[in-house]
Length: 197
Image 1: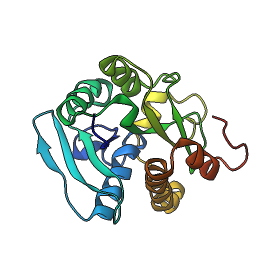
Image 2: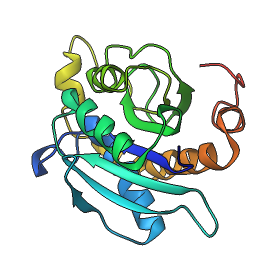
Image 3: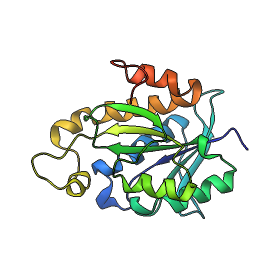
Image 4: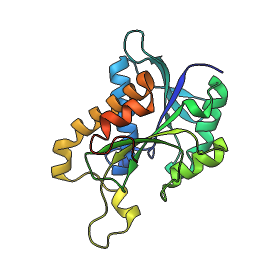
């Protein structure tokens, strides 16, 4: 197996979804691509990919944005892992998370999908839940708003003022995770209770 990492930004394709909370994973990948200084290209695995290194002498990565709807992300992820010879332990899913507050980034490996259909489909396609997750907090729906309606809406005006900082922080979390491992990254990004979910 290769030492390359597959970083997957979850979201939905199409201009109408670009600013949605559900697409925060793809926004983080755009930031990582900007740091690498290169653009995405189409791949036969129904994804846009970018191969490169994170920083000088940094880890080798394949950034991937599936070109299918979130709920069927597993096929492209499994196909890319197979194509590049990447073990599930070197797969990182960057995704929106309603169970943590907006402006918060948390990291974990394995565990449940918390009702996130994109993660559920990836777990099924990889035949394991033991891949890394960078969870980008988008907060909970207000009042009785349906969760699906909430994540398929754009960020609010106040949130948009903070959004670039959140995207930066999530990109930093991916970088640190790859360079120093999960425990160090958790200690930096979960300062209140190191090592907890």
